[in-house]
Image (cartoon, rainbow, N blue to C red; front, side, top):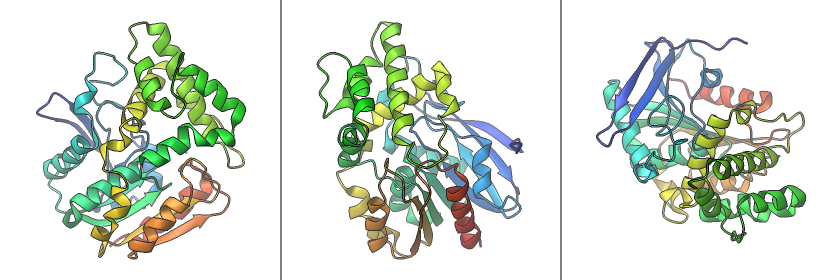
Length: 314
């Protein structure tokens, strides 16, 4: 399937020196829908339009700070990551909404985009007309520990390689921080190997669903570096959120229609995360796709997500 080209695109400049690339697809007069990509650091791509009926939706995508075609790119060690936090991203989303003249919009998040989408909807509930989450995450310290340490019980051989890639003396309980240090190392060879080891582990823990294939973008060393630097930055700070904040503040979503779609075989973000959220956010449906894993692009997960956005369309 050929991906569409954007009908509108531009760059949003921030006061602290970021230049954020945005692009729009679908019906320019349709209902606005914002896509929040995964990663962090994954960047947006036209394939996200498959989550929507583009005759009914105006699909808006934003490459989050440091990723995709936004600059400065996080792959450069000279790029300051102190101005790249969840709170900065929330401000960027609001700036884009205002810039594009949108009053309210649907928000769709995938993987890390679910964490960001939940934080945005809980902060600005009056701006979110509906919220769709695919492969639900909260990026808590407990989730990060599961992904980088406890999951070694499932993939012991691969985890040993992952631990080794974090460098001598790396704390096995805090590998995100250890990798973040390696990815800022002055020796480019150290950074190269750290990014490769991190992304190899990423491919392992999303591999549980039948038919999984490695992420082709990880073959690009520039993408690997961008992705690894941003993921380790956010994970080592538990998404710059307060503990179990997104679950605790789920009551702020009351009245916001929504849908959660999650794979039963998703070991990266086990389904109990979405299940717990559904107990408080009762305005959202939860569809558990039995044969799906974490990858939002799989046919079964994509189909369930598309059905959800069709149902939520005004």
